[in-house]
Length: 355
Picture 1 (tube, rainbow, N blue to C red):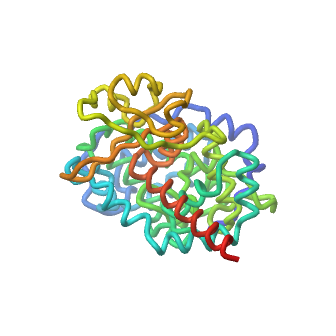
Picture 2: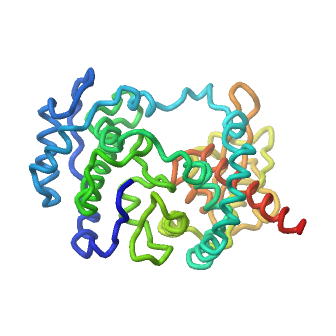
Picture 3: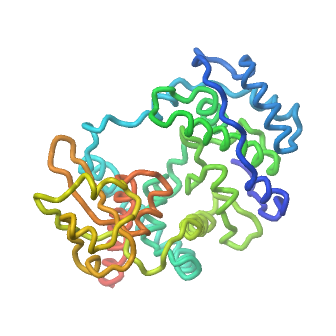
């Protein structure tokens, strides 16, 4: 596994690099049949541009990119599911299940102090952090088996052209590959060593390289940041990430909602998961938030949870629901995080009450 990362090694220069514009998106090229990116002229040209952009040793960057391998599975995994096949209840059964709940309860009990400190410092409750870590890696059990270098190179040079946001996503992954090279250079790490998800996410918290650099914190006080081995660093970093995206302490993530038969769903769902309406505006369009959501003074979004060919479900999301979706831009993902976290909390509190 990689060595811990010392935040102090980056300094002011590294902060300025993070603020710099990302490298331009690469032109579309024919997808490779396989092999190493060292055989692709545009990949080697990009490597030289990256080295100059970040003042990295050009021979080291070119050698690293040259050893990156095209992964045929990865572009296919990036394509969104067909709308008719999206089924919240099926997704929930896979994600909020007994194995994750039991593992989450153990994790909570083992790391209660770190979870409480994160709550105090960042305002993010333990159940939210536990929900994220449970969905992402089952509390560190499944951190990914793809070489991060290969995954990010594939998504930089061979992002699927049929994706509805191909250009923007390709540019994003080109930036992440650049940040990954910076991480490796600063850590003295061989770029071919780290393993992660098919999208290049790493560690217990599955941070992308840019998120690692912006939000990861040394939460166990050992002077370094290690998201591969330190549960405390992972806990603090998830809470730091949410705080960075505007988490509001004490605000619920969502409420139930009554949707009238004649509700104007086109307008209610126009902003997708982005909070854009007051409770009164939602009521006028036929969706009435329940409980304290009816008096909530902030912005809300009607969240639709399709169930395949069945009847969809709905909740009303606050700004904090939107923050959860910054980890993964999916309402299914956010709801699974929240419901797993709540199930874990109930398991922990139920056992405590029984003692």
